[in-house]
Length: 463
Image (tube, rainbow, N blue to C red):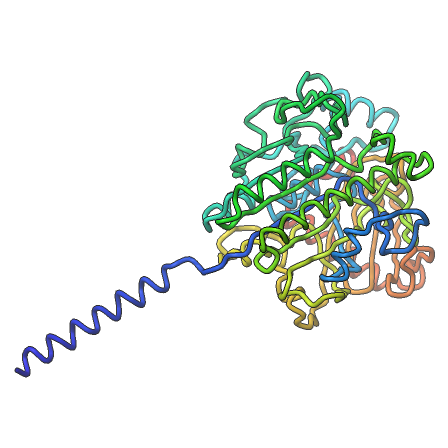
């Protein structure tokens, strides 16, 4: 009897072990859906809730701020689009990925010839596509059981898109080769060939004549949500709006007395509302995190910030960011902690129940503790490396922000700037001469980071 009793105990232990093992190997229940809306060229002030530009109407985006968390100090990894986009999908800085400038539609050789003409320094080397060996956030989420969709602008698919008939330089560089199950609209284009159908885009079928691209991408996003409502999904809706050319339906332009830019923002807002309405209709809001973000500063002024797209001043890199998640994010909350593009990869992996530490060389931090309302006491350090010329303002340089301090150095001019963003968000007062030690400290940190990521420097730069 004793023998059978011990056998019975052993059997129980084995069964318990198997049960526990099966529990721990099971994927987390109720993985949240992720909807990541990335707008093209939407500036810090280009949303109604900022109260900076009279006449802008964004009621649906306003709703996101009322029901979610608004970030006041959200940044992009670069002041132009392709580097930020590469950073978003890899979790690495543009300097590390080697995509530090927008990938030129005219082709790399023509671009270099144009940009470097009569210049003291030559622009640094950069890639014209996202290397296939880079692990993307879509690939990471697929291992967690997610269906992944990319709808809209990619701009990581090769240089020379203007020389193509359909925006495809090499199909192997498109989103569907980088972990996305669905790709609608993503190719090498940095701006659409046409905002109205026919689109001349090889990754999206033409609609009825006169169909507006922003509306079409919104409809495709809604369809993707509908088709994947029963399983966890990651949807990256990357609008071509509000990038030039300034094109919108005539009735919307009339609504804004001929202001085409405001009309484009209106159409953007309408389609944000369309996505949110679908999530509500399907009762998915409680299990879907929605992030609204832009890829760089606006081109038409970003008050109260200095500068615009293409510059290392705040107007080129500080952008709107709203996080919305019903029941998880405190309605109407505000976060003042600086965050940036590389933070989304680890955030999304963590949301999916994965471990971001398994992906090497990620440079970001998960913002999940921030959106959960946990107080952040760390002094975050952010970096920018932009060895390229732009006509819009301060470029061809690098920058660092640490706490309230921001330091910028121009590679070509050798001029240095130091700003206290807590007291001077407009960057009107250069404190370099009066706070030299702080500037030198930040310059040293910036240099260490550049060495760590093996940043490409301008040709002819010897410092």
